[in-house]
Image (cartoon, rainbow, N blue to C red; front, side):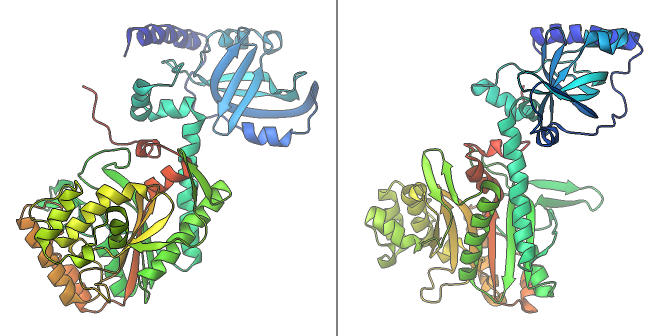
Length: 491
């Protein structure tokens, strides 16, 4: 705490003591509120200036401005702002004494009569005042610049108090998730929950967080993806359409698009392939935009992006060839693929095969240019251990990733339901782990056993909720759309 904050706190502690000396409890148990600011604005929209009603209401909120020694107070609640007029003579001596102890940031309750001032401001003429929470620290005056960004993320409660934009981002996030849930349920999907603690981390290529269960004396992993458990439910016939809106944890780097803890939508539908997942992705994203923003044309930074209609799809190899002139489909040897990738300044290890080389060039030269929505297909088998092989080229899989604004926002497969194929894919991943790839997937023998009981052909889809919220709120960082992002502790 700074020296200045200490001074303010000392002054407020004195006011707290004075309130108690007046017999006022500065932290009471309740306040029977009858109205909120936004509802009052709507209810009295037609009330003409310089009009006093006979309507008595009770409001509550945080003081954001005090003028004329407490005569006028701007009170903010979760819905908006309303003005309070305090006539000391009408309120009496005790309320007048209470007014002298109020500060910006205090939460108060007000009983009063609704009127509109001569200048047109909807106002509550106070007949009773109560302190509901005495604030001991002052609110920040300015909220701009890098240092203040750090404060916004570390002390999100302060950010939300002073920034309506931040409140709106998180409210919009809530609406986005609620809309996706409703759309899926309307289409017959069943919402389920799967474990966050895994004995074997699986379902994604990622490094997990490790924890320990004391009673069982065993190592467990925080979920990196719900995929393998969701497909177990598909095997069990719980429903032909399943989804989970889930938290995942990956022990990886932090960036404007990455947080170690993130939210995704993951779903599976029996008897369809990845092409059905393309249509579903387009429908979900466009309908969410319409519901939350009122249309499908959005602005992100300097880009105008259209989310409506059918989105194009193109193979990874074709996009790389267009950008670099290299046709990876004509390259067969791994060493030739690595050499081609390195000529394009793609960073790949010596152990990388043809598929990793193709993907590395795509990431280095193509990804950030995909501004308008596009489904990138033809992912190499080498990097897609859970996706069915392409029907025409066994080097590839029936997988796509959807890119918007240069970001991956969705990932989908025709799911492997051949247990022998899946066993071989896992074994190939384990070989990669032995070569030093810590993110390669592990063999989940029980999942293979589940497949041996028979899983219907299915399409699977994952959508990154945080990145979608970033797009639909024009937010430059993932930290803006997560209420409490992961931060390094202050020393």
